[in-house]
Image 1 (cartoon, rainbow, N blue to C red):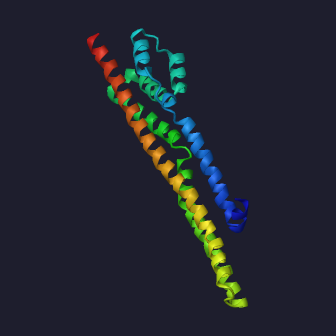
Image 2: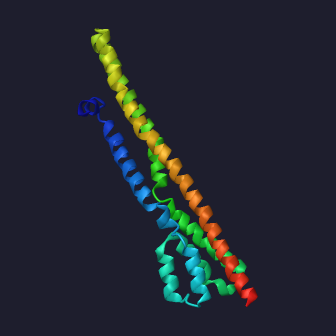
Image 3: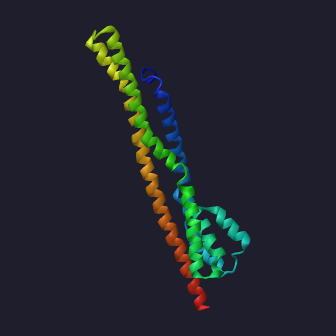
Length: 204
């Protein structure tokens, strides 16, 4: 493996760094985007119960805001519930935009790695081919087997770049879809809580 990397030339260095960065981002996103962490089960029911018991004070809301992304959205709505349903929904949407920004952290970087890695590989191949043809001009065609070997070495960077780019692209699309799914679910849960609270107030 080391010989293959060495044969690829100096352009293998940015490709290797890109692969390390991509693996780090993928591992971090898998850890940060766990469903239980983003959407704690029974959170809406707990908040509704606290609301019924009149226990949603500033300390509770502060704890709710820092507990999870869903909690942050719910706390934004609850903190402004006395301003009416419309303003409460606007606050939820504003908090939702901030939460989405946090959930999408590093995804742009992962997408950039997916886009740039094959270009780095292609650039390495171009440099390798330039070296091969420069050698041909100096020493003649020589042994065709040597020429074929030089071309295969030049293509190592292209293969390496694609090896990094393909999984990076797959996971980038996967995490984007996961974030979209979480956002829709959080909006549904938040609006459900808004409806419950205002129905209760109408009844009372």
